[in-house]
Length: 125
Image (cartoon, rainbow, N blue to C red; front, side, top):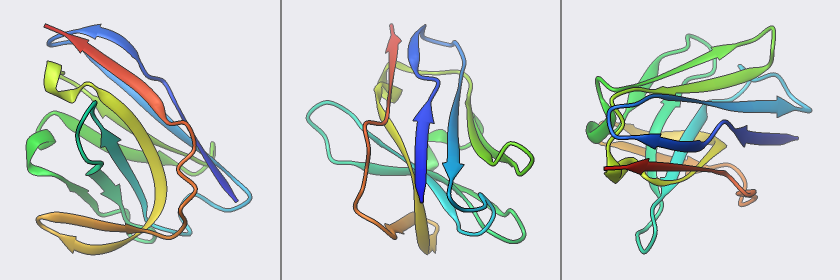
C-alpha cells in the first residue's frame, strides 16, 4: 500500500501546477485521500481531501477557490490542481490516506505515519 506524490516545481506567483498522487496496492477511491503541506519552519497543515465513496471535496480556507482536488480511478491517481499560486503556498506537499475529523475547519488524521518524500512546490514573488 503506497502513495507517491509528484508534480512539484518552481513557478512564479499567479502560476499553476498540478500535483499527482499515484496509489499502488489499493484502489484510490477505497479511502479518503488528503493533501498536506509543510512550509519551511512551519508545522504541517491540511490542504485538501476527497472522500472515498461520493468524492466530496474539502479545502482549508487559504486555498479555497484556488485549488481543486480530483481523482481518476482509471489511473488510480488523485490530483491537486493549484491555480493562482502565492509565495505562501511554497512547501513540500504530501498525500496520505486519511480519516476526516472535521470538514471545516479541515482536520484530517492520517491512517499511517509513512509520509514519504513528498513533492516540493516553490512559488516566487
